[in-house]
Length: 161
Image (cartoon, rainbow, N blue to C red):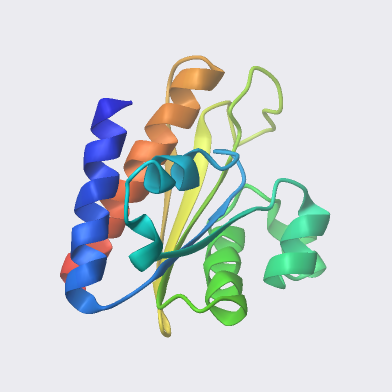
């Protein structure tokens, strides 16, 4: 977990340099990314909010993820990860957002989406980037790798803006 705190600290510095606030919308990580961020004293200067939208209904209600998108692609998809980050920006005071949606296991796998499948989204304004990865390990390991990649991916995304 020490590495996650270091990554969150780096994210905080990068956000402060830009004068931005972050919103997270987490499904698979269940608020773990937000916890790592809020473990850092002073994070309220650069962290707006964290939304845990675990169910499809909450993704639709709080992030405006279309029900048709969920039906067509499933919650674990890059399309939904993109819709989540767009919704987070629309409903918060943040300038940048990240999303995580995936299958931590041990159950939940479907054809083409094994346990460990995770989709990520990062957004700033109209710029959205998504990724789909498959992690190995048990539920805890998949969630830890997801949180780490989400923050590292955010740093990379900000560098490319």
